[in-house]
Length: 409
Image 1: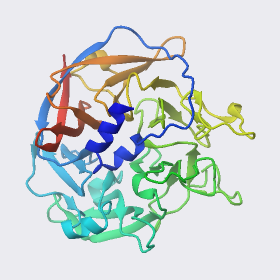
Image 2 (image 1 turned 180 degrees about the vertical axis):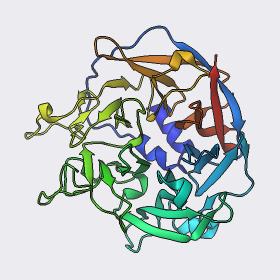
Image 3 (image 1 turned 135 degrees about the vertical axis):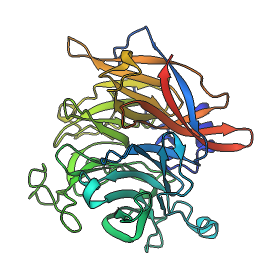
Image 4 (image 1 turned 120 degrees about the vertical axis):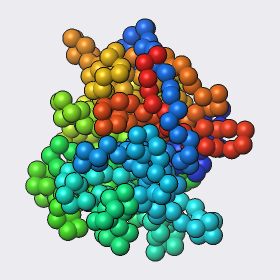
């Protein structure tokens, strides 16, 4: 746990860290997962280190070839041809004086562009906003904005429209990703972590609460509507927004553009990280299960009711799964059609289903790594399907954000 504590000290300004702030409760016995021996060679090529805390790269569906970078410290930036525009697309960061009073307010987790962004200019942001409840450090919100009608490289701050809000004493560390699915609905992942609260009881199995869930909503209604085919619609004391449950923290998820399946990386508590195929109404086991291992046994536990992960790994291989995307680019043929993902400790892997139906995890051998420790916070693809990783460098002069393109090794 020594490495993990070091990461926590370095990364206190990044909300993703709370997912890695692990406290031992039980000693799970990890089951072996299939992994090939041979690795695939890749290398990192620095694109920019001018963004404070980059955690996500997003591509707007407007054929503009712009790359939108989510800066966890409260801004969205635009890159064109690997060059950063001087003014942020959106800035919701708070002033230093306010930051001292409400340190997590203004933290941005994710951005999602409406499928019709090219015509309606709408996009959505998941972030921490000030709470009116004194005991809460913040509330988790999803807010809609539109790009300026005269300058599409700037968001119209006056267009702000509240879509979704969630209060809670620990919710400030549980924001994660928002993304539109192939069905046009907005999916939202919410964690079930307990940053700084040793008395917290997990809610991932409680369908009356939204913690530890993947939600699915229709934002084409105001503020949103519930899709009629959501699995818990019309069931008493169960939230109809819920699509799947039993997660600790799905920091990043993605849809395979080929199969349309939803893949998510669920961050472990003590020893195991997992990758899941997330399906309608699925229960993924937290807090009873952590990966393939029993974490919190109870008399009512029914492990047969849980959907097993497709792959897991222990903290010998990583400390905090970041998740990733399916690769459909041209520069890395050895990774084509594979799910490529990263871990917070800067390790990377690919995942591919073999002829026997097993998901095989393959380590990526990285050259060109920075000399300073690099904590990966995001792994995304550009408009051409090429891969990038982004995160935090721990330099002798303090922390610094960095974005690297993944090249053939």
